[in-house]
Image (cartoon, rainbow, N blue to C red; front, side):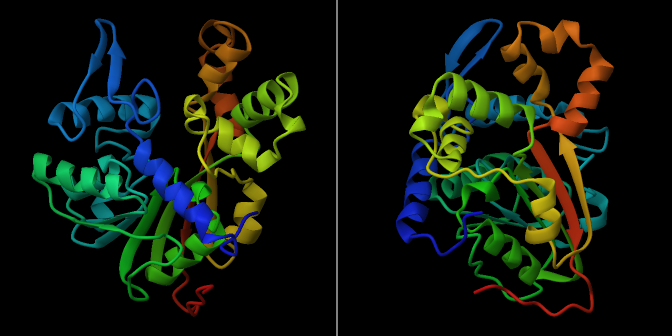
Length: 307
């Protein structure tokens, strides 16, 4: 697994790429063109319409995670953190941070790239919510030890070469007894095995010239933009024995909203008609693309950040 000993040039490449192609949930990575039943529409970045379109897509992709108590309320215990300090690592366009602010948390949002920071600040202004938004590196957070009650990250830390260091930083800035939730891509998933390793690596012969990490980076986020500089999905075993080994109460849940689409690529309509809802749900629980890890910083454990 890559670590923070890799060169700063890779980190700068990651920062630039995500600034050029931010997570807009458009038709292409970084695009602000959206398509629905009435056709395609281009909206201005930073506009209210942009945030509404991006959010609608993000919410739709994650429909099983919502509840009557709020967006993503099946993941986040919003009532437990009202009035408390919550940190997001990798805020992107600020959708999740906004939901936390609307639920009454004191939100701090951090991102490596300045476009994400600017867009999240603009969102907070447009939606009239409060929170602190700043540019920062998840591998070296500008906060005191034990500063936050809850820290979360959604689909971000597999894009930094120092995933292990970033998670050590999460533990450092958590209060004793504080909790965390982190989503990382799953290397033991249908999407990784079929699209990355089989379809692109074997059938299209790209494994002859690309190593496994480069393949994952090329075909994870931004494949139509020639891929991003760094993506390295993890396994459940790596989460338990390496990344979160200093935490208590570590639990890993496989989220598989991607599974129907992957099956449809494999065989047309396999994911929508042939398999059936219960079969799809069972496959998603085992072979989905997203691993959601929750854990707690034990109250008696010293903080030992890897600096």
